[in-house]
Each structure stands twice: as structure tokens, then as C-alpha cells.
Length: 262
Image (cartoon, rainbow, N blue to C red):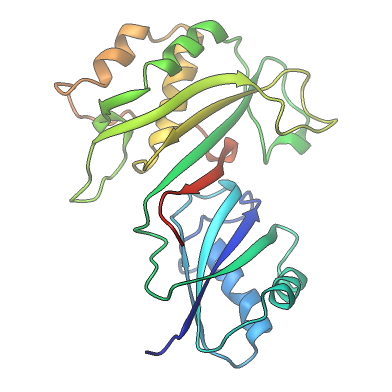
């Protein structure tokens, strides 16, 4: 076997100036930057990395897993220090732990929690742009909170996915979905009031949460109704994806709970 050792790196990153996780031609990506930093740590030693999943351009992560495969054993504390010394300020590695070489972070059973941060009303300070999406119109927050609860449970999410893969599974379960006051991400240049859409589930379709958020924005503006959301989640929905997508900068992968022993 080429790689005899495997490790899970817990990573945080600010995605605002990157074109998502996946490596692409002529674009600055998160995966590319992680591998570049690791190449300095390992010098000439061979390694391979796999991310826990893709993220869209400008999406950030409070918690993200990178699985590292190497041909030699590493000293975890020294490695963590060396990695952080070589990562740009957009990244921070918080932990590293050895796992079995046959462990697969992509296929491992897990629960993901996403947060979408937003405010409405007066325009935000420009420094808030990487973290908060601002809606100029006043929003009916109570109605949006009621709408968010409609996404909980098992539903058909055909309308909440853009360009699905051929084998995409649209019948999915959302464990929890709520809009709450933001007390997690704060700064003195944030508006007095901001909010979070919190969504937890086993897996999400491409753009699913951003399409859900956009729908809730339209609900809050008075352009859609609760009945529209109910109908959009039924098995007999028209299966045409919604065109209105919320900006990516407000989205953050907040937590990952692995459901199997590593």
C-alpha cells in the first residue's frame, strides 16, 4: 500500500476570497491552498488529501475535516504547529488525529450543521460582508421562523437543488431547521441585530440550503406564502428547481458529528 498512515485534520477557514473547496483551473481554491501548505510541511515526502465535502465559492467553515494520507507516521503536535505556521491567515488547523487507512471521510456516516447568517434593514458596515448577508427590505421574521420549521422532517427536495447528479437522492430528512437570533458570530462592526438559519441533517443537495434561505427571504418579504413551501416539499411537486439562490457568503459549515468510530 502506498500510504501506510491516515489522519483527520480539523480545519477552520474563511472562504470569502476562494472559489470553493474543489480544485479548479484558473481559480484560487481551498483545497489547493491546503495542499500547498502541506507541501512545505512535508517538503519532498508524498501525501494525499481528501476533503469531507465540497463547498461553494465564498462559503466558510467553523469546522471541516481533511483526511490526510502519508507514507510515514507524523508527530501530531509538531505537525499541527508546522501546518498552522504555513497556512495563510484564512485557515486554522485545530486538531489532528490518526485514523485507520481504510477509513473514508466522504462515505462515513455523519451529521452536518450549517448556519446561514443574515441581517435586514439598514446596510451593514462593509467589514461584515464576508460573514453576513444583508437584505434591504424589512422581513417578517416570525413568518420566516414558521417557514423554516416546515423544512424539518422527511421531504422531497427536487426544487431545492441545482444541477443534480444523475444518482441524486431527493427524498431527504432534515433533523432540525430554525431561525434564531445570532449570538455566535459577533463583532463591533456587525449590526445590532442579526440572525441565523440553523439546519442539521445527514446530507444536503447542491445549493439546497441557499435555495431554502432564498425561499425564506421571499417569504419574509411577503412574496411567497407558507402554503408555497408546503407544496414545494411534496412528492408531487413540479420538480423544477427554484431560480432564486441566496448569496453564498452568509453560509457556514458550522459542525460535523461523525456517527461511526474513527
